[in-house]
Image (cartoon, rainbow, N blue to C red; front, side, top):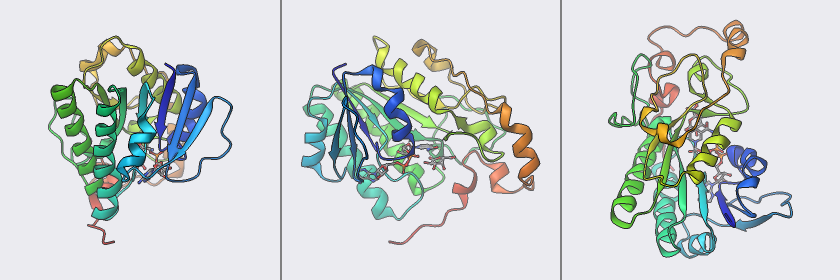
Length: 264
Ligand code: NAI
Ligand code: 15L
């Protein structure tokens, strides 16, 4: 690729992806509403609000692939989610349509299916069960990706990321953790396969506990290598075991199931 766009590049995952995805393109275009520090010689920086349609069109122009991480990543008021995750995503897909349909990796979330019990095993075909307005915005994104694929041939991988952090820090994350390296390896496969289509992919490392079946995307050739197992003993020793009826222990989305509707 000549140019790979990473939105949300000032954020946690975005920052971790800068070095890990650099080999995929001659130039990384890093975009965020927040300032992005210290661009390297192979990086160009675009400061842009996803809700600003013209700015998003300029941001996407000339890009051969997009890793879309930008947006509100937790439960917030409907207006905040509307601007960044709904209007922002529509702007991104319209910009992609206008600029030769670069392949998109869309950072969806486990909160699109957060009301499933932790005892249930899901596939890509499991109906969505969002646990928050945030989760609803990710379901919207997946639906938008599907519509743009069938109507316009836009290829998008919607990755229902579990918990993409440096390391797991609580008991739920023993099942949901996705290492930065495994996420980067997934992105590499998304841009490498000759035909992507419009898959739903669960984003978790090779953890011992696994709620999600990625059988429908074996054609990607993605094999997560990391595991939360090496932190299990430490987490079990330092975090209290929740009661069996605690939402943190009951639902895949954990505490997000308990979020109220936030006001502006
Ligand atoms: P983050 O909050 O660290 O990064 C998101 C970035 O988006 C921020 O730098 C923020 O400035 C930017 N942003 C927010 N509103 C914007 C707007 N209107 N216009 C342009 N940029 C805007 O979040 P993180 O953890 O890096 O997550 C990245 C993506 O992955 C998010 O879409 C999140 O929903 C998704 N995700 C993350 C998970 C995780 O475990 N970190 C789990 C599931 C999904
Ligand atoms: C997400 O979707 C959030 O963006 C992230 O902050 C974590 O809460 C993660 O899910 C999770 O469920 O652990």
